Length: 347
Image (cartoon, rainbow, N blue to C red; front, side):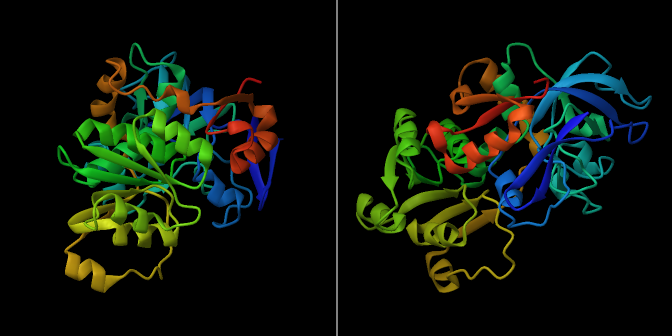
C-alpha cells in the first residue's frame, strides 16, 4: 500500500510499504476513506520532534475490512472513525474513553512513533478497536467525522478545561484548526465575548466570521491588548492552542485574578519557565492535556447532528494522498488561504 513517510526535517515521501496485519484478536484493519494533515504533524515535519521513518497521520476514517474475533463494537463493512490518541486499550480509563489516564502509561498519538503507523495511508491497523474506534453516526459528513478523530475533541477539551461560565470573557490563542475548533466549542458555554488571537490576517478574518473579536499579535503582545480591552482586568479564561513557550506564558499574563489557562497546544518543553509569582498572586488555575478523544464523542456527535456546531468549513483544500509533499508545503506556509487539508487515500 501507499503511505506518507517522514524522511527528515521537511522531507516526506509517498512510499510503498507492507499492508498492515491484525495486531491482535482485539484489532481491526481499516481501508481509509479520508485523512488529514494536523498542526501537530508539523512538529515532526519541522524536526522539532524525532520521527524519521514514521508513517504519518493521526486523523482518519474508513471502512473495516478485517476484524479480530474479540472485537464486538464494529464489524467488517462498518464505516468508522479512529481516535488519534491510543493507549493500552484494556485498563479501566482506556475502556471508559480516557486513554490519557491509562494506568499502564501507554498513551501515544498514532502516526508519531514507529509502533503506531499513521493514517496518511491506504490502510491502517487499530488494536483494541472497542476502545478506540466508533461507527460513523448517521447524518455526519466526511469532514465532521474526520474532525472527530482529533481536532474537534481537542478544541472542545480546551474550552471545557477553561471553566467558561455564562457571560465570561475568553481568549483563544492560535486560530489554526485546533484554535478554530476551540472557538466553536467555547461558544457552547455562553461567554459574553471571545477574543481570537493570531498573526495571520486570513485566520483573524475567519475568526471574526465566527463571531469572535480578532486580535492581531504581530506587533503588540496579545496580553497587553487584552488588558486594554478589559479595562485592565484581564480575561476570565484563555485557551492556548499553539504550544509555543511564548504564548503559554503570555496567556498567564492575560488572565484575570482567579482565572483559568487551558493549554491544548502541544508543548513538551520540560524546562518551560512559567511566571510562578504571577500565577501565585493571581490564584490562577492552569491545565494542560492531551485530548482523551473517545471520551468526547458522546457529547460532540449530537451537537454535530443537530447543527449546533458546524465546523466543516475549516477544510479549505482537498488533495490526493499522492500529492502529500505539496500538501504539507501548502499547509505549512498557509499558502492559497490554506487552513486544513483533507487527503483522499485512493488518489
